[in-house]
Length: 546
Image (cartoon, rainbow, N blue to C red; front, side, top):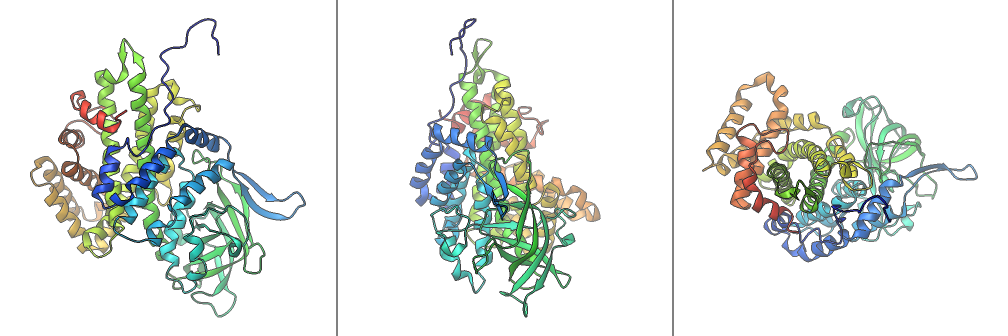
């Protein structure tokens, strides 16, 4: 455009055509350290593909053109389907080709969960909405794998060929699994669910039931089946509810409306009613919550990964902008106060990355009590902390760009609107923190292993050791008041673990900056309060070696 009143200058070049993996030093180091070095070439190739400008543009378009509900066809037949932008299917195809929906289960090996997590961290930076069906499908596999009929669907669950057709799964190349738990009256209080299941025969595991009721949030509605929580004999059980029945007819799953969400716009979440739908009992009768909680342990890890991905991309966008944008005679990144803010954000991103990959490794093993502690105690704590910190960080990164960050033309507004969903989905912050306390109480051997690891990891770090001992005292003496301290307990567990990991593996100046800013002085809720700009050079170059 030819402007007649001024010359366009000092506008930052759009970020694109870069490799998300090869520019992320912390991610590369973590992949090698946590046992997934064998996947590095694939990650580099995928990072290059996702970093193309056309990928950024497609993600923008997919989130601008929201899914649309088609309850009936033009002739009046009930079809209950959702139409997506073609770009949605392209991102789904890319994710399936990477095996994000099944790889950790199809090819188990040391580092398999880490390899998947690293892929997830890349994909989530560009298009986060498509992660939802990927997460639920992957999390459903270990639950369904125990069923005697699993072989009838396993080849489609393990297929790398994304198949978006709405038809009986017997004719498809692949399939997806969703979840249906929350209802209007309950939300996270699953025991208040009212959806009813009635056996069509003798009943019992593997038998068919009639499902009548509703779900208030039903994510990934075009999945080929959902795991649904329903009540039978006053006990809650888990049911496999397919979209299509064996005879080729549509199951009675009626989509009522698409939720008008703040973010996560490319992905559809709907309200649904079951009017005599047919489902198959999964696991023992009355063990529905336990079955779905097992599944949720994997989805919660993905919430941590998804927030870490959003955090990383927001920081990269802010650093890129600060390097090019001139203000008051010099680039933003050379100004002391801005360097303090950017350094603090970079510390947050690396700490989230190092913990996320360490958690993923814990899901690769099952025997060691410490690994169990990472899964059962630290994962909900990390979901609480990292998901919340990513919301604040996205807002701070938007502010680095000023008005250019606030408009929908760029990526920061979408990242900011996307961030809260991970903090809410699969249990909000209070639910996570109460789960942390519950896990500590129910699994004392695992808690003891974690506490011993924290104490040992802080040897030589008096500041950290003091906080560890303070946490121990609180857990021992708080008694009935401990519940009110649950958020503090979760925060301390995460910050201490992040500090220990950074002290062990990150450059000395980065680790020192993290420890000083998180455990000493007035640092806290606002980024840039307690990080000296003198720390910035090495930290910022490491965060974005542009």
